[in-house]
Amino acid sequence: MGLHCVNQNSGPRIALIVLSLCLIGPYAADSSRQQAQTNPSDLELVARIKASLAPFAEAGNLSRVVLVARHGLVLMRESYGMANYELNVPNSPLTRFHIASVSKAFTSAAILQLQEQGRLNVSDWVSRFVPDFRRGSDITLDNLLTHTSGIPDINGLPDYDASARNPHKLPEIVAKFANLPLEYEPGTKYSYSNSNYNLLALILETITRQSYSEILDRNLFKPAHMTNSGHDGDVSKPIPLAAAGNKLLRVSRRFPK
Image (cartoon, rainbow, N blue to C red):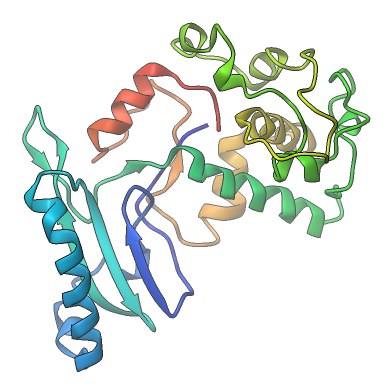
């Protein structure tokens, strides 16, 4: 369930964001005046970062946008490489990037919001929300969140590459692994599995009666003023200023993350 992201509020004292993720909204405005006010230590920090990135940029191995900020003050905002080589379009601060599994953080946040509202608890069994899921009474939401469920990774299934070329709804995706044997007893091991977050997304939709896209937009993106971020779930809707890698992912129709 891919997301694209170019606008996000931030709270860290220092933020270095390499844009395979997203740009920070309040820093999207012209920052030349802000940058002129930086102190020597800030300038030294920026110089060191640029020096570290230079060899990769010179070798053509750096294709992203980098933003550095301290206390809301933009210290550096640089674009490297191309958003689209075929059309000769360079990356810019407005380029939108597909963030792939980084979207799991948004899924987790949406689950925890529902816990704050008393609509679920991470100690709840999966069977409470998806009654027909195999071993659902042995797997908690916390197991899903922490990749300790034992559910096989859908991305590793033999037919994944072929299936991922076609659009699927969440129930159809979950059905592909719902009846598979667990790889280990829940809570006894850690094993990264995209299936966990496919199932969490379905649980979000089941509880809220909203689409995954609507949940993120209403509860996360809009409150955080992430006005240029969204769920990349409909290939019929073009994404303006999207990097070409995003287009490739849209064509492949990867399963939701």
